[in-house]
Length: 283
Length: 350
Image (cartoon, rainbow over all chains, first blue to last red; front, side):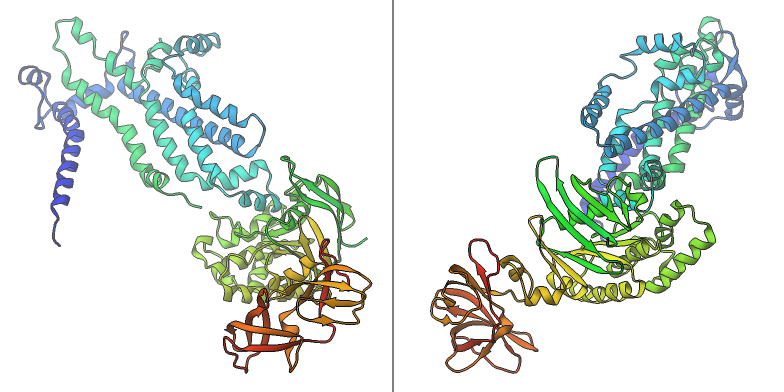
């Protein structure tokens, strides 16, 4: 097969793109397998070192934090619970609200939709004080509920579900009605299975969104047992700066590498659905 | 009271459009009723009101002795076949058929029995495990009918179910629907804009125009005795020829011919209707047709031509004749096979 010049150019561009994405991760990984001393003296590394098991073992099991109560493993679990809760509830709530907006033809459906939509302009960071006030009044600080609840409404997902439901032909609903389906069974038996690729795609987006939350958990949690991974990145090995010990750069890199694993796993497992959801719909 | 009774049913849409005007109609048990009319005439609206998919603005609908105006569609025990079939895309054929039964809380074995019976009847047993997207148009059509049959409803409603099929398949499915309805014996209402479909399927036919039933009767009654200009023009293919004429003292005078002793006391401007198949060639005929175009169908020829100022006048001649463009044919009307309509109201006057 003859290779066209344009294809070569395209591949070069793609390779550059891949390198830009992968190199920083590789450097982090390579550096995470060296001793702190050598990183400090010789900079970041491109080659693998021999401290892999020591560094990773230390990161996972050493207790960190101000009062040295939390391990990285615990923070991973916290982040996972938070991201899972946020993603699941966001998808469920958005799907249901979109269902109401599209199929219950009440007069205010359109204004309400736009009201939901403009909340995109008011992200959590903007309303963080009122949100904190509410959550703390409810006594939900330092709890998973408190971490998850203020983030479960999603205008983006509502919008996508609404657009998708609008493309479903009316006859399907009418036919289902004549077949004895009620509002709930139409949602469960039709809209959920029809939008499962969409659900997978939304779930991935929302999982990554929940996982990478920084400010909210930082403000919300005072107890170290509720710390999340992204917070930990800033906090966990800070004690090394205060003493005479060396900065623990290698462990930090190991920690960063580990923190990438859960979202990557979610994407890997759901990517088949995710791609389907982006390019096609089963109708 | 008959099986399905519509009494002064009216539909006015929220935007003020009046789709159906005070329509009354009865359908007997086991009868195959066809609603036919041009698009936008209200026939589908009428059907959807029976199904419960449109609210009834005024009037009553009784099904099997029960007033169903306020009954939810799911409770009416009616089944509908939609124009685009509305099969459930994510379910296989088996589940498409079984879904309605499941919702009625029927046990699994009975469902299996019923689905298999319906599948056998419609010859879709081989693809019960397939998804609708893997079926051809005709097979989808069968599945849609299977979904209706399997529930054994009080009434079948068909909303132009054949219009998405190609011409050959349409004729085949038309035949199958008719056979099936006779076999199952369920009361059916079939909506179509195709008058051939309407004529062939119907036990009785309702010709609908502008939200009003123009005429109700058996297909042959309607063909032989159209009560209005609209019905006369709509039923029959090729379309009836219309000529302007005057009726005075039982004598009809058209542009260049006269018919005497007409059985009507009406005087004034009228429209004369003649079906293309009711013309015969004869010497010294009433009408001289200048041939402009001949469509040879094999079994017969459709001859289009001009009579003085009237264009596209159609005459159906036997297929074994050769008629050339430019010839002039002398035609007579078969005895009493003409229709006279009041020009202003469109009502039949002879």
